[in-house]
Amino acid sequence: MLKPVPGQKSEKSPAKVRKTVLLSIASGLGVLVLIAIVMAFVGKHEITVTQAQLQQRIDAALNQRLAQQHDAGRDDIVISSAQLQLSDSTVTVSVAASGSKFKHAVDVNATAHGKLRYEKSTGSFYFDPDSVDLTKLEIDRRTIKENAEGLLDQLGASDERKGKLSDEAEAWVHTKVERLAMRGLQHHAVYTFPASMKGQAGRALLQGVEVKNGTIVLHVSYLQLVGTFLIYALVFVAAVFATVLFLCRKPV
Image (cartoon, rainbow, N blue to C red; front, side, top):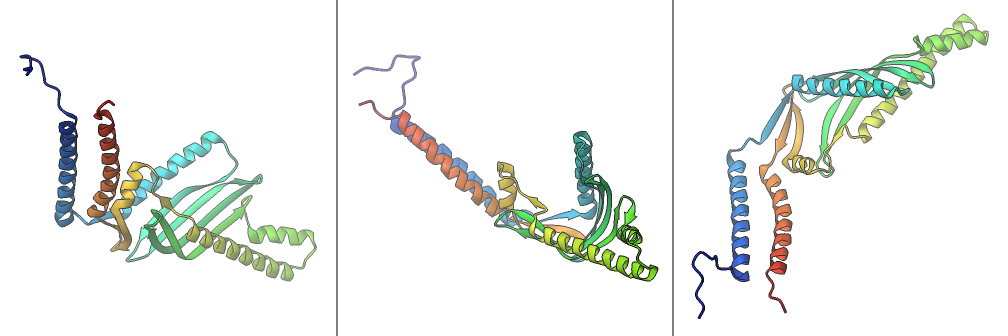
């Protein structure tokens, strides 16, 4: 019987290698589950975001968008400011936008009142408006009423008819724009978690959102987050185990 040479490491059998790998993976998963249980009982289940924190992020995003728009030099309307206000359960957003469209200068101010909604199935945030009020709409620095009056002057309309028709035209345009804005807000997500690993983690962690006491409260679940990662971990374990079996197989 051959004895191992002193100073020379003996090779592990394939069975011992597989056992070592499986024990290491099982230990890691056990620690992960233990952390999840601890976080489920002592971890924070609500994350509060204040109005000031949200406003700071909105301002930073708008400044970046304005810089990109300026560098691109595109002919488009851009939101220049957005002021956020949180009440007990309602979100109010006041927006100012300006730019040019079809070689005409456009200025718009609007205020929307509504509620924040989170769709967990898609990981998307929506703003459901209860109302949208168009407080300013100017084309080439003239209101819809003033533009309509100019057109009616060219057609030779009387002052009485001109005043009535221009008021109706302005009301009709404002109503149409407000309805289009409400429809767009209802069907287009304000934000959606990206498909990256970080985005998937955020989607698994967040369970719901609500506006309460002038803040946005995010309801989170650490067990859900760890459960999602366990699924990825099990897929990884299966891949590693299959690789180990392939490498440690006996040659035919």
